Length: 496
Image 1 (cartoon, one colour):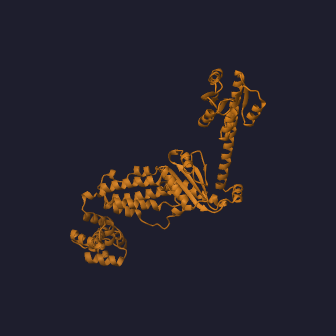
Image 2: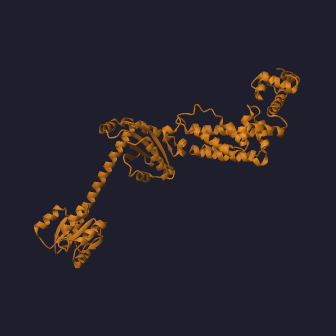
Image 3: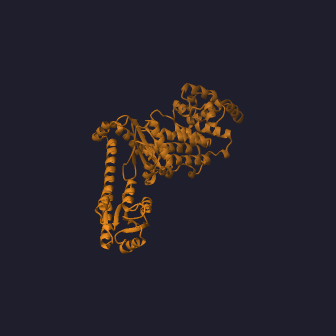
C-alpha cells in the first residue's frame, strides 16, 4: 500500500478527497492530514509518505514552497498539486520541482484517481529499477572479491591498477547447525573500514577480505567477532599478503583450515601462525602416560595429558580420518593394558567396542576427546579408585603392572606427586624392601616362571621382564636364585 498525506487548509476539501477516491482499490492508504504548508512539511519529514496531495494556496508556506523545502531536505515521494489558479507560472514552478501532477479545482474524481494511480506506478517502476541496480552492484562487488579469492587475472589486474592497499588478509566463517548469522557478521563490521564480506555458498559460509589491516588486528577483530557470536562460528584466517595477486594464497590457507574444522573447531579462530605444520617430531607415548594416571586415579593429570594429546593433533597436515584412527588406537592400547591389570573387573567398566564405534561418529576432535575423558575417568574410578587403596598400595600395584618397563624412583615420584627421597623412605617402610631390590625380586620371580613353564630363550626372558642387558640379568638371577638362568631352565628338562 502506498502511503498518502493530504495537505489543505480547508477541512471540507480534505474530507471530500478522502470520500471520493477508492483508496484501497488503487493500493493506497491515507496516513495523515495537514492543515497548512508548515504543518504539511513537518508531517512529510516525520511520516515519509509516498504521495502528497497538497493545495497550492495555504496559510504559511504555499504548496509549492512546502514541496521545495521537502525536496531540499531529501524527500523522494511524489507530489500532486491542487490549485484554483490556472496561472501558467505556478505550473511551470511545480514542474521544475518534480511535482507529479498539477490539477485544477474543483477536483475531478477520475482525474485525481488517475493521477494517484500514475504516481503509484511511477514509484513501483523506480523502486524496481533501484532494486535491480542494487542487486547488480552487489553482484559485481561479490564477483570482484570472489575473483581475487580465485586468483582471476582480470580482477587482480584491476586491483593492482587501483593500488589503494598495501596488505590483504582473507578469512572464512561458517556457523554451527546451518545457522545463518551473516547479518550479525555484517553488522559487527558495519563501522570498520576496508572489510569486504561475500557469501561463498548457500549454507551461509562467508568470505572476508581485510585490506590495509595489521595482521594482529585482523585476528583480534575475528576473536571479538567469535565472542559476539557466542562461539557458534568457526573462523579460519589466512596469512597476511602484500599484493592482490597473493590474495588467493591467503584465501587458500583459510579455506584449507576451514575444510578441516573437524580438527580445529574448538579453537574458535584458527590461523596458520597459530598451528603446527605436522606432528612428525612428537613421539610421546600418550597411552602409557594416560594409563599411569588412571592407575593412580589422578584425574587432573589424566585430563591435562588428554589436552596435550589433542593439541598434538592440531596440525595442518592432519585429517579427520587420521585423527579418529589416532584416538581409536589410543583407546585400544589403554584397553589392552586395563584388561591385563584389571581382569577381575566387570566388562562394563572397560572400554567397550560400542564406545569405540561411537566416537567414530562424532563431528569434531574436541567432542571425541571429551567423550574419551569421561570414559577414562569412569574406568579409572571403577578399576583404580583412591577409596579402595592406600597411596603405597597404588605405587606397588603400578610397579607390579609395569615391572617389565624401565622404572626409576624419580619417575614414580613424579607420577604420584612425591619427593623422590620421601617416596623411597615411605616405600621401604611399607614393603620392607628398598625400591630397586623390590623391582628385582618381582622381575626375577617372573623370569623363574617363564624359564620353568615356557619355551623362551634366556635372552628373550631377560627382555620380557625388563632387563635389556643379558649379562646384568645373568648376575641378578644368580644373586637371587643361586644358579644361572640357563642352569635353572635345564633343571626343568628344557634346553636352550
